[in-house]
Amino acid sequence: MTTPNHVVTGATDGIGFETALQLARHGARVLVHGRTADRSADACARLRNAEPRGEFVPVHGDFGKLSDVRALAKQIADLAPQVDVLVNNAGVFMKTRVETVDGFETTFQVNHLAPFLLTVLLLPQLKAARAARVVNVSSMAHARGNVDLEDLGSRDYDGYGAYASSKLLNVHFTHELARKLEGTKVTTYALHPGVITTKLLKTGFGMGGAPLESGAKTSVYCATSPSLEGVTGKYYSDSREKQAAPQAYDAALEAKVWAISERLSRLG
Image (cartoon, rainbow, N blue to C red; front, side, top):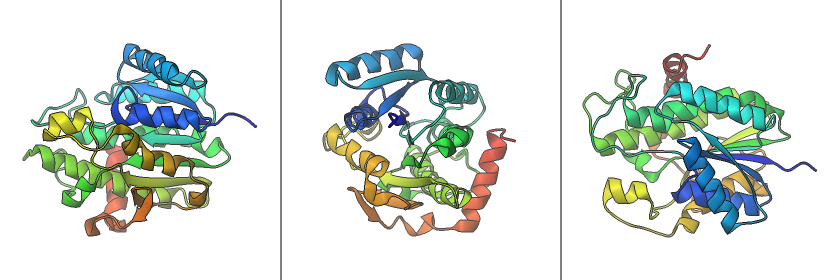
């Protein structure tokens, strides 16, 4: 039996680091994503120190640059012809509006457009696995989000509003990806990790929360639980299926978001 390949984005600290550690303890070979080569290599060293039996492989790419996301997808494909689990964990909270080199508002690009592009580019590797899973780390903040197709870049900027809307987009992406992958053995999940003490929570909201081990729990559950085999397009919190916010269920909107995301990320 071959060792499964699990990819965790934003794995150099916080929930992502803990998720990578726990997935390795479940027997996975973990591709550890960081913004730079040095950050991902350092994270792998710390992960090996925490779990000497684990297999950790560094990959890197700045989600604020779509060219880096494309290069990251190639790195992953070269290292893992089959990807069994992709955990889209990387995310930011921006108090002020900052544009990326691609001309998009940073929260929108890092939290939605980059993981969208990475996932679509890795679909051949995901489909090559016996049964693959895409796990999208959203947030209960999605309930405060609003998707305006005419203003996905949040020109009238509010930090929390942009964050909440990006987390709503994560849920919409999960639903539409499930529809696109119907008939394959790739399943999708969105989740709220809990209110966890992370750098994002402290810098963005000025507060703490539960320990990191708790924050990784639902991601690891969605990535590994046998009970979810064949289940797709659902939302989870505290390792249980939950209803997402009412505005998260709009198939027509989700199809439009997908088409816009394809265009903005220059797919096809």
